[in-house]
Image (cartoon, rainbow, N blue to C red; front, top):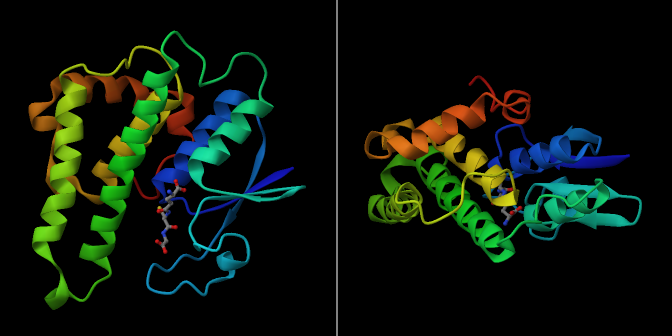
Length: 199
Ligand SMILES: N[C@@H](CCC(=O)N[C@@H](CS)C(=O)NCC(=O)O)C(=O)O
């Protein structure tokens, strides 16, 4: 049995759990302690970067989330979540979704963990600007969101993370197409059964 070291609030871990559901691969979940201000957590024994998610397999630990998703995908039957007429487009959307998560997660650390008087507001604004630019491109239809693949799974996890941690962004206001897309995604079993905590 594969074990995922994770937290329920991590968008990267949620993406992995969604992939496991879609590919019919059972995962045991283990809540990990992460501390962005201290690398010396137990996690460091499995991932020198001390980040989650980490997948424990019979042959050792695997990270990061992109590698884990590929690993789990390969365990499932059939063509999988990286197959399609435009495989580079799938990978690009996966990278874009991960980039949105990266910016949103570090902005969250800055706003929620860093002492208030030390918060670098311009830097936070620069992270939000990256997110806004990515969302504008998606609203303009530059990526294919019509089919289920690794890119669309990552995007759904990233967008709901914005609702979860950065509701003040109100990203839907100028992006009705993307909002409608997420509404349909949220109704799926893969999203319903992997919700962020208290959300
Ligand atoms: N590129 C990594 C990013 C993972 C990541 O940033 N995870 C966050 C939690 S959402 C983390 O472990 N943060 C702890 C830290 O930065 O020390 C991946 O895709 O797995």
